[in-house]
Image 1 (spheres, rainbow, N blue to C red):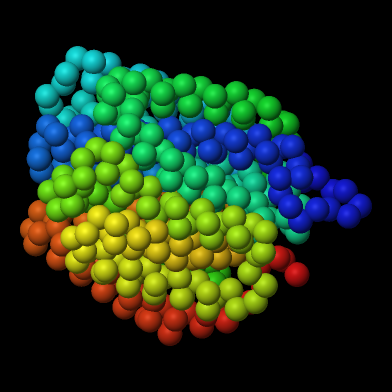
Image 2: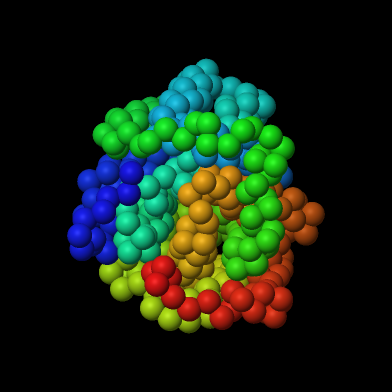
Length: 409
Protein backbone atom coordinates (compact mmCIF):
# COMPACT_ATOMS: atom_id res chain seq x y z
CA UNK A 1 0.00 0.00 0.00
CA UNK A 2 1.37 3.41 -0.95
CA UNK A 3 2.26 5.48 2.12
CA UNK A 4 0.30 8.73 2.33
CA UNK A 5 1.68 11.12 4.93
CA UNK A 6 0.33 14.67 5.00
CA UNK A 7 3.43 16.00 3.29
CA UNK A 8 5.10 13.00 1.61
CA UNK A 9 8.84 13.04 1.17
CA UNK A 10 10.27 13.00 -2.34
CA UNK A 11 13.16 10.82 -1.10
CA UNK A 12 12.30 7.15 -1.65
CA UNK A 13 14.67 5.95 1.10
CA UNK A 14 12.43 7.68 3.64
CA UNK A 15 10.07 4.70 3.43
CA UNK A 16 11.16 1.51 5.23
CA UNK A 17 9.27 -0.83 2.89
CA UNK A 18 11.16 0.62 -0.04
CA UNK A 19 14.50 0.28 1.79
CA UNK A 20 14.03 -3.48 2.26
CA UNK A 21 12.95 -3.73 -1.37
CA UNK A 22 16.11 -1.90 -2.46
CA UNK A 23 18.35 -4.12 -0.35
CA UNK A 24 16.80 -7.22 -1.94
CA UNK A 25 17.46 -5.81 -5.41
CA UNK A 26 21.10 -5.11 -4.58
CA UNK A 27 21.71 -8.61 -3.23
CA UNK A 28 19.90 -10.39 -6.06
CA UNK A 29 21.66 -8.36 -8.73
CA UNK A 30 25.03 -8.92 -7.06
CA UNK A 31 24.37 -12.65 -7.27
CA UNK A 32 23.43 -12.44 -10.96
CA UNK A 33 26.58 -10.44 -11.78
CA UNK A 34 28.86 -12.89 -9.96
CA UNK A 35 27.21 -15.76 -11.85
CA UNK A 36 27.42 -13.88 -15.17
CA UNK A 37 31.17 -13.29 -14.98
CA UNK A 38 31.83 -16.80 -13.75
CA UNK A 39 29.70 -18.43 -16.45
CA UNK A 40 31.26 -16.30 -19.18
CA UNK A 41 34.76 -17.36 -18.23
CA UNK A 42 33.71 -20.98 -17.63
CA UNK A 43 31.96 -21.36 -20.99
CA UNK A 44 34.73 -19.67 -22.97
CA UNK A 45 37.33 -21.86 -21.23
CA UNK A 46 35.41 -24.93 -22.40
CA UNK A 47 34.59 -23.85 -25.97
CA UNK A 48 36.80 -20.91 -27.05
CA UNK A 49 33.79 -20.01 -29.25
CA UNK A 50 32.23 -16.51 -29.36
CA UNK A 51 28.89 -17.99 -30.39
CA UNK A 52 28.75 -20.05 -27.20
CA UNK A 53 29.01 -16.80 -25.22
CA UNK A 54 26.12 -15.36 -27.21
CA UNK A 55 24.04 -18.43 -26.37
CA UNK A 56 24.49 -17.68 -22.66
CA UNK A 57 22.39 -14.55 -23.15
CA UNK A 58 19.90 -16.19 -25.49
CA UNK A 59 19.14 -19.03 -23.06
CA UNK A 60 18.32 -16.53 -20.32
CA UNK A 61 16.14 -14.41 -22.61
CA UNK A 62 13.96 -17.14 -24.12
CA UNK A 63 11.83 -17.75 -20.96
CA UNK A 64 10.89 -14.05 -20.70
CA UNK A 65 9.77 -14.09 -24.34
CA UNK A 66 7.90 -17.39 -24.23
CA UNK A 67 6.18 -16.66 -20.90
CA UNK A 68 5.42 -12.96 -21.41
CA UNK A 69 1.66 -13.54 -21.59
CA UNK A 70 1.79 -15.35 -18.24
CA UNK A 71 4.31 -13.45 -16.16
CA UNK A 72 2.59 -10.07 -16.35
CA UNK A 73 -0.84 -11.49 -15.58
CA UNK A 74 0.56 -13.33 -12.56
CA UNK A 75 2.12 -10.08 -11.29
CA UNK A 76 -1.24 -8.29 -11.62
CA UNK A 77 -3.33 -11.02 -9.97
CA UNK A 78 -1.17 -12.33 -7.12
CA UNK A 79 1.12 -11.00 -4.42
CA UNK A 80 4.12 -9.38 -6.08
CA UNK A 81 6.07 -9.83 -2.86
CA UNK A 82 5.47 -13.61 -2.80
CA UNK A 83 6.34 -13.91 -6.47
CA UNK A 84 9.69 -12.25 -5.78
CA UNK A 85 10.44 -14.69 -2.95
CA UNK A 86 9.57 -17.78 -5.01
CA UNK A 87 11.66 -16.60 -7.95
CA UNK A 88 14.67 -15.87 -5.76
CA UNK A 89 14.40 -19.38 -4.31
CA UNK A 90 14.34 -20.86 -7.83
CA UNK A 91 17.44 -18.88 -8.83
CA UNK A 92 19.20 -19.97 -5.64
CA UNK A 93 18.48 -23.63 -6.45
CA UNK A 94 19.85 -23.20 -9.98
CA UNK A 95 22.99 -21.62 -8.51
CA UNK A 96 23.52 -24.74 -6.40
CA UNK A 97 23.29 -26.76 -9.63
CA UNK A 98 26.00 -24.58 -11.19
CA UNK A 99 28.17 -25.08 -8.12
CA UNK A 100 27.83 -28.86 -8.44
CA UNK A 101 28.60 -28.72 -12.17
CA UNK A 102 31.77 -26.76 -11.46
CA UNK A 103 32.76 -29.13 -8.66
CA UNK A 104 32.37 -32.11 -11.02
CA UNK A 105 34.57 -30.39 -13.68
CA UNK A 106 31.94 -30.64 -16.40
CA UNK A 107 33.42 -30.43 -19.91
CA UNK A 108 30.13 -29.92 -21.78
CA UNK A 109 28.15 -26.67 -21.93
CA UNK A 110 24.60 -28.00 -22.20
CA UNK A 111 24.20 -28.65 -18.43
CA UNK A 112 25.35 -25.07 -17.83
CA UNK A 113 22.78 -23.80 -20.31
CA UNK A 114 20.10 -25.90 -18.57
CA UNK A 115 20.85 -24.24 -15.22
CA UNK A 116 20.83 -20.82 -16.90
CA UNK A 117 17.43 -21.66 -18.42
CA UNK A 118 16.04 -22.23 -14.92
CA UNK A 119 17.51 -18.92 -13.79
CA UNK A 120 15.92 -17.31 -16.85
CA UNK A 121 12.51 -18.69 -15.89
CA UNK A 122 12.88 -17.28 -12.39
CA UNK A 123 13.91 -13.90 -13.75
CA UNK A 124 10.99 -13.92 -16.21
CA UNK A 125 8.50 -13.94 -13.32
CA UNK A 126 10.67 -11.89 -10.96
CA UNK A 127 11.10 -8.87 -13.24
CA UNK A 128 7.47 -7.78 -13.79
CA UNK A 129 6.56 -8.34 -10.13
CA UNK A 130 9.62 -6.46 -8.91
CA UNK A 131 9.11 -3.50 -11.23
CA UNK A 132 5.35 -3.27 -10.65
CA UNK A 133 5.76 -3.30 -6.85
CA UNK A 134 7.64 0.01 -6.66
CA UNK A 135 4.66 2.40 -7.01
CA UNK A 136 2.95 0.44 -4.20
CA UNK A 137 5.80 1.30 -1.81
CA UNK A 138 6.29 5.05 -2.32
CA UNK A 139 4.03 8.03 -3.19
CA UNK A 140 4.10 9.45 -6.72
CA UNK A 141 6.29 12.37 -5.70
CA UNK A 142 9.02 9.93 -4.61
CA UNK A 143 8.79 7.74 -7.72
CA UNK A 144 11.59 9.47 -9.72
CA UNK A 145 13.88 9.08 -6.71
CA UNK A 146 12.89 5.41 -6.43
CA UNK A 147 13.56 4.79 -10.13
CA UNK A 148 17.02 6.37 -9.89
CA UNK A 149 17.82 4.36 -6.75
CA UNK A 150 16.49 1.18 -8.35
CA UNK A 151 18.82 1.65 -11.27
CA UNK A 152 21.69 2.56 -8.97
CA UNK A 153 21.14 -0.74 -7.11
CA UNK A 154 21.66 -2.57 -10.37
CA UNK A 155 24.63 -0.41 -11.29
CA UNK A 156 26.20 -0.78 -7.85
CA UNK A 157 26.11 -4.52 -8.41
CA UNK A 158 27.53 -4.14 -11.93
CA UNK A 159 30.47 -2.15 -10.54
CA UNK A 160 31.43 -4.41 -7.66
CA UNK A 161 29.77 -7.66 -8.75
CA UNK A 162 31.93 -8.36 -11.83
CA UNK A 163 35.14 -7.50 -9.96
CA UNK A 164 34.01 -9.71 -7.09
CA UNK A 165 33.02 -12.42 -9.55
CA UNK A 166 36.42 -12.29 -11.23
CA UNK A 167 38.23 -12.43 -7.89
CA UNK A 168 36.06 -15.22 -6.52
CA UNK A 169 36.30 -17.24 -9.73
CA UNK A 170 40.06 -16.70 -9.62
CA UNK A 171 40.09 -18.26 -6.14
CA UNK A 172 37.79 -21.11 -7.18
CA UNK A 173 34.60 -21.41 -9.22
CA UNK A 174 32.76 -23.03 -6.31
CA UNK A 175 33.58 -20.01 -4.12
CA UNK A 176 31.94 -17.72 -6.69
CA UNK A 177 28.77 -19.81 -7.01
CA UNK A 178 28.58 -20.35 -3.25
CA UNK A 179 28.73 -16.60 -2.65
CA UNK A 180 25.97 -16.04 -5.20
CA UNK A 181 23.77 -18.60 -3.41
CA UNK A 182 24.30 -16.79 -0.10
CA UNK A 183 23.27 -13.48 -1.71
CA UNK A 184 20.06 -14.95 -3.13
CA UNK A 185 19.22 -16.30 0.33
CA UNK A 186 19.84 -12.91 1.97
CA UNK A 187 17.66 -11.25 -0.72
CA UNK A 188 14.79 -13.56 0.24
CA UNK A 189 15.17 -12.41 3.85
CA UNK A 190 14.90 -8.77 2.79
CA UNK A 191 11.75 -9.42 0.76
CA UNK A 192 10.21 -11.04 3.85
CA UNK A 193 10.62 -7.69 5.64
CA UNK A 194 8.51 -5.83 3.02
CA UNK A 195 4.94 -5.39 4.37
CA UNK A 196 2.27 -7.51 2.71
CA UNK A 197 0.41 -5.73 -0.08
CA UNK A 198 -3.37 -5.96 -0.68
CA UNK A 199 -4.46 -9.10 -2.55
CA UNK A 200 -5.23 -8.50 -6.22
CA UNK A 201 -7.05 -11.71 -7.13
CA UNK A 202 -10.43 -11.56 -8.79
CA UNK A 203 -10.07 -8.03 -10.09
CA UNK A 204 -11.04 -9.08 -13.62
CA UNK A 205 -11.89 -12.50 -15.04
CA UNK A 206 -9.09 -14.31 -16.81
CA UNK A 207 -9.50 -14.05 -20.59
CA UNK A 208 -7.46 -13.47 -23.71
CA UNK A 209 -8.26 -9.75 -23.45
CA UNK A 210 -6.81 -9.47 -19.95
CA UNK A 211 -3.73 -11.50 -20.89
CA UNK A 212 -2.82 -9.28 -23.86
CA UNK A 213 -3.81 -6.02 -22.13
CA UNK A 214 -0.16 -5.11 -21.56
CA UNK A 215 0.67 -5.34 -25.26
CA UNK A 216 -2.40 -3.32 -26.20
CA UNK A 217 -1.57 -0.61 -23.70
CA UNK A 218 2.01 -0.30 -24.94
CA UNK A 219 0.88 -0.27 -28.58
CA UNK A 220 -1.73 2.44 -27.97
CA UNK A 221 0.43 4.67 -25.74
CA UNK A 222 3.02 6.07 -28.11
CA UNK A 223 5.25 7.67 -25.50
CA UNK A 224 5.61 4.29 -23.76
CA UNK A 225 6.04 2.44 -27.06
CA UNK A 226 8.72 4.90 -28.18
CA UNK A 227 10.64 4.73 -24.88
CA UNK A 228 10.64 0.92 -24.75
CA UNK A 229 11.48 0.35 -28.41
CA UNK A 230 14.26 2.99 -28.41
CA UNK A 231 16.05 1.14 -25.63
CA UNK A 232 15.43 -2.21 -27.34
CA UNK A 233 17.10 -1.36 -30.63
CA UNK A 234 19.82 0.88 -29.17
CA UNK A 235 21.17 -1.74 -26.77
CA UNK A 236 20.38 -4.67 -29.09
CA UNK A 237 22.77 -3.12 -31.61
CA UNK A 238 25.25 -1.43 -29.29
CA UNK A 239 25.61 -4.01 -26.50
CA UNK A 240 28.99 -5.73 -26.26
CA UNK A 241 28.84 -7.36 -22.82
CA UNK A 242 28.92 -10.92 -24.14
CA UNK A 243 32.22 -10.23 -25.92
CA UNK A 244 34.05 -8.99 -22.81
CA UNK A 245 35.86 -12.33 -22.24
CA UNK A 246 37.29 -12.05 -25.77
CA UNK A 247 38.46 -8.46 -25.20
CA UNK A 248 39.94 -9.44 -21.82
CA UNK A 249 41.74 -12.53 -23.07
CA UNK A 250 42.61 -11.92 -26.72
CA UNK A 251 42.60 -8.15 -27.39
CA UNK A 252 43.55 -6.35 -24.17
CA UNK A 253 45.24 -9.32 -22.42
CA UNK A 254 44.08 -8.41 -18.90
CA UNK A 255 42.98 -11.79 -17.46
CA UNK A 256 40.00 -12.67 -15.19
CA UNK A 257 40.45 -9.65 -12.92
CA UNK A 258 40.65 -7.39 -15.97
CA UNK A 259 37.44 -8.96 -17.23
CA UNK A 260 35.80 -7.97 -13.97
CA UNK A 261 37.07 -4.40 -14.38
CA UNK A 262 35.77 -4.23 -17.95
CA UNK A 263 32.36 -5.51 -16.85
CA UNK A 264 32.36 -2.98 -14.00
CA UNK A 265 33.17 -0.03 -16.28
CA UNK A 266 29.60 0.74 -17.43
CA UNK A 267 28.39 0.48 -13.87
CA UNK A 268 30.89 3.06 -12.62
CA UNK A 269 29.52 5.67 -15.00
CA UNK A 270 25.92 4.66 -14.49
CA UNK A 271 25.89 4.71 -10.71
CA UNK A 272 27.50 8.16 -10.63
CA UNK A 273 24.70 9.48 -12.84
CA UNK A 274 22.03 7.49 -10.95
CA UNK A 275 23.03 8.91 -7.58
CA UNK A 276 23.06 12.41 -9.03
CA UNK A 277 19.59 11.91 -10.51
CA UNK A 278 18.28 10.52 -7.23
CA UNK A 279 19.34 13.81 -5.61
CA UNK A 280 18.63 16.14 -8.55
CA UNK A 281 15.96 14.60 -10.83
CA UNK A 282 15.56 15.81 -14.41
CA UNK A 283 13.16 18.77 -14.26
CA UNK A 284 12.63 19.48 -17.95
CA UNK A 285 13.40 18.30 -21.51
CA UNK A 286 13.37 14.65 -20.35
CA UNK A 287 12.86 13.35 -23.89
CA UNK A 288 15.80 15.31 -25.27
CA UNK A 289 18.01 13.98 -22.48
CA UNK A 290 16.95 10.43 -23.33
CA UNK A 291 17.91 10.77 -27.01
CA UNK A 292 21.19 12.45 -26.09
CA UNK A 293 22.02 9.56 -23.78
CA UNK A 294 21.40 7.00 -26.53
CA UNK A 295 23.56 8.94 -29.02
CA UNK A 296 26.50 9.21 -26.60
CA UNK A 297 26.12 5.49 -25.82
CA UNK A 298 26.50 4.66 -29.51
CA UNK A 299 29.55 6.91 -29.98
CA UNK A 300 31.29 5.48 -26.91
CA UNK A 301 30.59 1.94 -28.17
CA UNK A 302 32.43 2.71 -31.40
CA UNK A 303 35.40 4.11 -29.47
CA UNK A 304 35.51 1.06 -27.21
CA UNK A 305 35.45 -1.29 -30.19
CA UNK A 306 38.53 0.21 -31.84
CA UNK A 307 40.55 0.67 -28.62
CA UNK A 308 43.57 -1.54 -27.84
CA UNK A 309 44.49 0.31 -24.63
CA UNK A 310 42.98 -1.07 -21.40
CA UNK A 311 42.56 2.26 -19.59
CA UNK A 312 40.90 3.92 -22.59
CA UNK A 313 38.62 0.92 -23.11
CA UNK A 314 37.52 1.13 -19.48
CA UNK A 315 36.99 4.91 -19.82
CA UNK A 316 34.72 4.38 -22.82
CA UNK A 317 32.76 1.74 -20.93
CA UNK A 318 32.31 4.22 -18.07
CA UNK A 319 30.95 6.78 -20.56
CA UNK A 320 28.65 4.15 -22.07
CA UNK A 321 27.22 3.39 -18.65
CA UNK A 322 26.69 7.06 -17.80
CA UNK A 323 24.88 7.72 -21.08
CA UNK A 324 22.76 4.57 -20.81
CA UNK A 325 21.73 5.50 -17.26
CA UNK A 326 20.09 8.70 -18.51
CA UNK A 327 18.06 6.74 -21.06
CA UNK A 328 17.06 4.06 -18.55
CA UNK A 329 16.05 6.63 -15.93
CA UNK A 330 13.76 8.51 -18.30
CA UNK A 331 12.26 5.33 -19.77
CA UNK A 332 11.48 3.62 -16.47
CA UNK A 333 10.00 6.76 -14.89
CA UNK A 334 7.79 7.46 -17.92
CA UNK A 335 6.51 3.87 -17.94
CA UNK A 336 5.65 3.84 -14.23
CA UNK A 337 3.94 7.25 -14.33
CA UNK A 338 1.97 6.54 -17.50
CA UNK A 339 0.71 3.07 -16.52
CA UNK A 340 -2.33 2.37 -14.27
CA UNK A 341 -1.64 -0.06 -11.40
CA UNK A 342 -4.18 -2.61 -12.64
CA UNK A 343 -2.12 -3.31 -15.78
CA UNK A 344 1.31 -2.36 -14.45
CA UNK A 345 2.45 -5.98 -14.10
CA UNK A 346 1.52 -6.81 -17.70
CA UNK A 347 3.08 -3.63 -19.08
CA UNK A 348 6.24 -4.31 -17.10
CA UNK A 349 6.28 -7.86 -18.45
CA UNK A 350 6.30 -6.40 -21.97
CA UNK A 351 8.99 -3.96 -20.88
CA UNK A 352 11.08 -6.80 -19.44
CA UNK A 353 10.85 -8.69 -22.73
CA UNK A 354 12.11 -5.61 -24.56
CA UNK A 355 14.85 -5.12 -21.96
CA UNK A 356 15.74 -8.79 -22.19
CA UNK A 357 15.80 -8.59 -25.96
CA UNK A 358 18.15 -5.62 -25.77
CA UNK A 359 20.43 -7.31 -23.23
CA UNK A 360 20.34 -11.12 -23.50
CA UNK A 361 19.29 -11.21 -27.17
CA UNK A 362 21.77 -8.41 -27.78
CA UNK A 363 24.47 -10.67 -26.35
CA UNK A 364 23.45 -13.38 -28.81
CA UNK A 365 23.55 -10.82 -31.64
CA UNK A 366 27.03 -9.74 -30.56
CA UNK A 367 28.31 -13.31 -30.34
CA UNK A 368 26.82 -14.25 -33.70
CA UNK A 369 28.19 -11.11 -35.38
CA UNK A 370 31.64 -11.66 -33.86
CA UNK A 371 31.65 -15.29 -35.07
CA UNK A 372 30.98 -14.19 -38.66
CA UNK A 373 32.77 -10.84 -39.01
CA UNK A 374 35.19 -10.62 -36.08
CA UNK A 375 34.88 -9.11 -32.62
CA UNK A 376 35.97 -5.52 -33.34
CA UNK A 377 33.81 -5.03 -36.48
CA UNK A 378 30.80 -6.45 -34.62
CA UNK A 379 31.14 -3.86 -31.85
CA UNK A 380 31.88 -0.89 -34.14
CA UNK A 381 29.01 -1.63 -36.54
CA UNK A 382 26.69 -2.04 -33.54
CA UNK A 383 27.65 1.42 -32.27
CA UNK A 384 26.93 2.95 -35.66
CA UNK A 385 23.53 1.25 -35.64
CA UNK A 386 22.75 2.77 -32.24
CA UNK A 387 23.43 6.27 -33.56
CA UNK A 388 21.08 5.64 -36.48
CA UNK A 389 18.36 4.41 -34.13
CA UNK A 390 18.60 7.57 -32.02
CA UNK A 391 18.09 9.73 -35.09
CA UNK A 392 15.21 7.71 -36.51
CA UNK A 393 13.30 7.46 -33.21
CA UNK A 394 13.64 11.22 -32.62
CA UNK A 395 11.82 11.67 -35.93
CA UNK A 396 9.26 8.86 -35.56
CA UNK A 397 8.26 9.54 -31.92
CA UNK A 398 7.92 13.32 -31.48
CA UNK A 399 5.81 12.71 -28.33
CA UNK A 400 8.84 11.15 -26.67
CA UNK A 401 11.16 13.88 -27.91
CA UNK A 402 8.84 16.53 -26.42
CA UNK A 403 8.45 14.81 -23.02
CA UNK A 404 9.20 17.31 -20.24
CA UNK A 405 8.60 16.49 -16.55
CA UNK A 406 9.09 13.19 -14.70
CA UNK A 407 7.50 13.96 -11.33
CA UNK A 408 3.86 13.28 -12.25
CA UNK A 409 2.89 16.97 -12.06
